[in-house]
Amino acid sequence: MSIIYKKAKFYLNGTQVRQDYSYNSKYKYYYILGYTEIKIDNDVATPTGFAAGSATSSSVSLKWDKNANASGYEIEQYKGGKWTQIAKINNSSTVSYNVSRLAADTTYTFRMRAYKT
Image 1 (cartoon, rainbow, N blue to C red):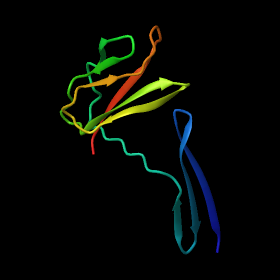
Image 2 (image 1 turned 60 degrees about the horizontal axis):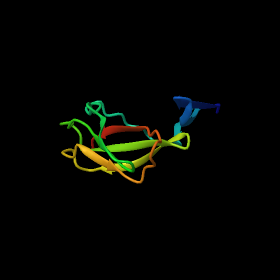
Image 3 (image 1 turned 180 degrees about the vertical axis):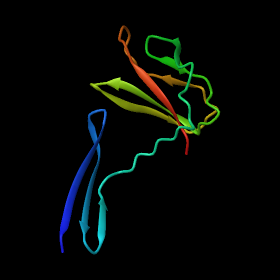
Image 4 (image 1 turned 135 degrees about the vertical axis):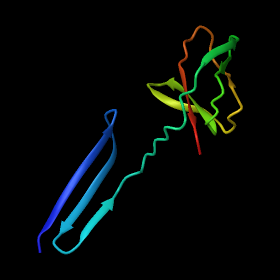
């Protein structure tokens, strides 16, 4: 009986997201999965109109247009060299979020995405 061993790695933006191992013999085929599945749902459009609204010296209101196909939204802030989730909004009708505890004269970067459950 001959056994063939194969290993494959998959990357997304330079980060390994999946690694597959497979073993193939003359009599049986085994496929071992050791990764987390990433599902991309193309039915949810990117939110439009994402912008900063009113602001004070310590807070800013983020706003966007309602996405009819979304279940909710996730907002992230870029800090310390990485993106960190600061809010998960489980209501697609919500179209604003207030970020507080900000420092005056500091630049902040935010991004958001719509999601569907």
